[in-house]
Image 1 (cartoon, rainbow, N blue to C red):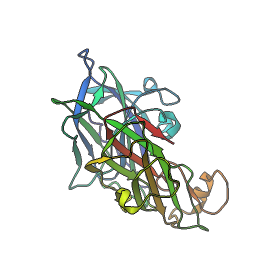
Image 2: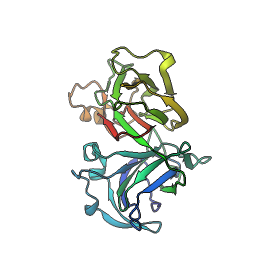
Image 3: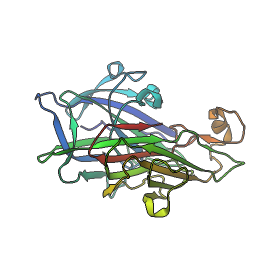
Length: 308
């Protein structure tokens, strides 16, 4: 499927949610072992989720739209900005790469590993574009997803989506470090791929294997992901990394406060504490808020995991 092209005006951030269904032409599940995720340059991210509990983001309330021959609906902005609306929706795939040199991120899953979808299952593609002071969109926005059917599926892929929401990057405390932990279900699991996500105040993003017990950050030897690129952090795949039985992951976000080019008034207006300290807090907008999110893919699947 692919979205129509759309304009992203100067100074604008756009986040739209596109809904479509897995073909319901068979009674058997559809197994996918390759994802191709395409973005025109300028995108902040694209995330693909399975639709679950409906809160405020209802596919039925969307505008009908043709997605390259796939019929669906779209909700532009509004409820698409509000993360509680999809807090229970399992992650499917994500990409933050949208360069001219590599407009398509192609990810072949490990041999024998595939993602499982039920016939008629509904998915949501969330696309975020920015054309402002921190990022720019040189052309028009557009996104696409291609799913390739597996021929050797034996192990199901699982996903983990985790966020650290208690973040404050303030003028009076300009270099904070925040961490989070997320436990895996019991059993042995292997990490296939991972990437981190924050905004332009982010300096370093690290993910570690965690024993599930320790309250101190794991040693450097346990680190399996690190990125210092906020705008287009790489997806690290091909890991085949075993996590400790009964453990999970520990992730850390290191920040550097910066004077907002749009001024502190808009940043202060978003601060729940109203501290008037130009504090960037958790939120979706690149210009005025921050994130500290992990997207991780593992096998064999026990369950889809959300840690907030």
